[in-house]
Length: 291
Length: 248
View 1 (spheres, rainbow over the protein chains, first blue to last red):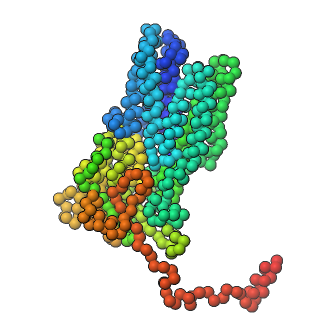
View 2: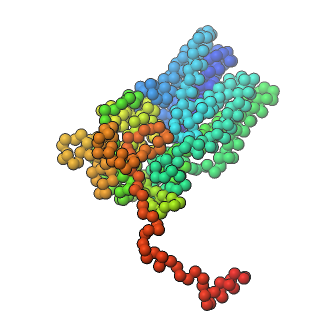
View 3: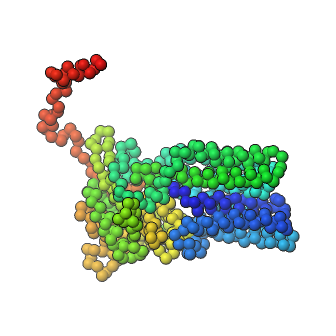
């Protein structure tokens, strides 16, 4: 799949932003005043910045409001509603906490719930697609959720929580790579089922594409650039996103170390998200004799 | 709404005969022509005369080489357009309701004024039937020529999809696949029409008729044995050269 920068930025930053808001709205850390303002500003900045970035990927962003209409069937529409609830409720909680020094516990709980639900809806946009076997797995929502919560704990400075969560996130990611590498072959879709010309996929091959040039389908779904570096990028992603932050958080607390851990984590998640798209193979590639 | 109808009154679709398709691409051209000049946003081309032309099409013809172990190899031309699935995954993922499946005839359409161009429907389609128009930035797909099949201004023989009307080999058939007594349903029954990627659970309406079995190699011609090569072993100078080269 084509790794569109707008979508990678969106899933990475919004995931982190909603993760941070989860912790802030549950009172970890319970901060008000200027410190609280800064914390919440970072959370909202990441979440909203990511959501705005996702609209750059649209052909007609001016009609984006229409995406709220089909929540009964569409995960993308559900994500729009859930993110709206999450931002509105955590906004109310933040206003109370920062300016009036009151803790609206119920609103905080609801905010945290909707932040988790938003990240889940985002992940289901990908996990629902049978056409991309690597994504069509329970590990996709698991990875999105654990990344968001672990990153949130890190940004919120919850060191004792962040350490096991980051380690767990690393384990989930490695598992999803191991299983994901086998997913396409296991899906049962191959050129034989795609064409119905024979029962044995080894007996049929693409002889000629419909056109000599490229097309939307090949640009969007058959993205091969950088796949040959995937092993190296995977190791870099794991080290940056989870390894280095765990080491930096394990040594005695200092703000510089936490900042470096956060930067390293974000860089690592960007790499992992890039691979999430670049390595995903869509079954339509089969028709073109490609993966 | 992007919820799928439980049942459609008709199941209009195409039956494509892989035995007779000659791969001439006339249906591709007529489809592009009709759908550029008529309903909806025109199908654009970018950089049409440049080094890397790209454009949107609703119908494309692939070619596959089938080489079974015990039978002669053959080439199959394979037209592919929207299959108007009963369980269309492209419809349910649409966040705006632009994608929908019609209750009256089962045609899957895009309301272009509602489309935000997110591309998720194209991601959900296993067949590559939807393409984002590079200029209009809305999703384009086969409409089954909805502006022809009900168009009383056209002569009756033209009230079929443009690809069907154009095909010089008669490889494309149009009709109601929900009616077991329709010509297309009988054709599917008779020729063993198949679904593409049945394991994806999309329940496509369009059916593909497999190529008829080809003749066997061994009964091609009684003179064939006389055409076998007679000089397997070289002789004279070449025999000496062959042996010498072997020794080196």
